[in-house]
Image (cartoon, rainbow, N blue to C red; front, side, top):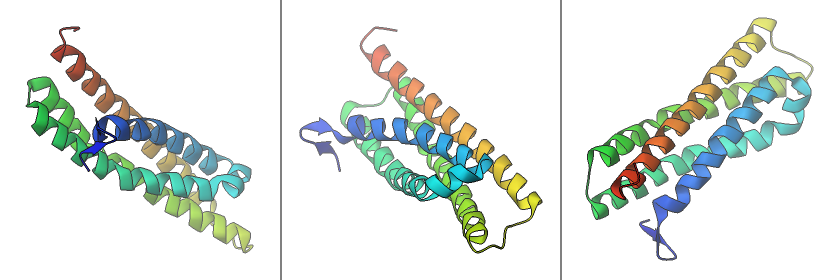
Length: 154
C-alpha cells in the first residue's frame, strides 16, 4: 500500500500507531495491576494489541515506499532504522496480553494463577508498555525531525 486517497499511506498509518501503542500500553498495564479492569478490558486490549502488531509492518513498509520516493537523507535513514525496530516493541504487547488472557480465563474458572505469575505479568506489562511507548516516541520524534529538517525548520 503506497497511497491512500492520494496521500502517502505512511503519513496516515503512522497516526494509528502513535495512538494505539500508548493506548494499548496503558490499558495493558491497567489490566495487569487491577483485576477488575482486566475483566472489563482484556478483550479490548487484545484487539488493540493485535491491530498494533498487524499495522506496524504495514506502516513500516509504507514508510520504506515513501523513503524511496523522496530519497534518503541521514535524518530519514535514522527514522527508518528506528521504525524498523518498532515491531520488536509491538510484539511483546501481544505476548503479555496473551499471559493476561490466561490469568483472566483461569480466574473466570475459579483456578487463579499463583501470586508469582501475577506479579510477573505486572512487571512484564509495565516493561513492555513503557518500552513500546518510549520507542514509538523515539521513532515519531526522529520522523518529525526528518520532515522538518528537510524543510529547513530545524
